[in-house]
Structures are given as C-alpha cells and as structure tokens.
Image (spheres, rainbow, N blue to C red):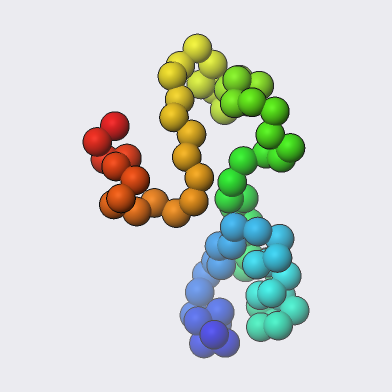
Length: 77
C-alpha cells in the first residue's frame, strides 16, 4: 500500500472513513486524498425532493443502490 500511495498522484475514496484510514493507518498525505461521496443524501425523504438538486426535475429517474452487477439488468434500461 505504501508503494501504491507513493506512486499515485491522487487517491480517491468514497467515504470519510476511507480517507481517515488512508491518513491514519497508511500515512497517506491528506493533499493526495479526494473524497467522492458514494450514495444518497440522508435522511432520505423521497426522491422527488432531490431531483432539482441533481438537475433532473421533471425527468423519469430510476434510482439504484449497491454495486453494479450484470444481474441488475441496468444495461437493458
């Protein structure tokens, strides 16, 4: 992991916990770490409340959760 951190220009994580792990356990420089949040805002109060936030108001949206896999059939949509 140390070599990977050293050779990387940026380190992308999807949670604060992941960023903390890189900094605290692996001593990664905080300036190399980018957090791209994974998931949806919480608490969730219905998708229509967030459509304007994501610029999709007035559009049909099919939200999904979890990792993508062939069994989800997303490619058929």
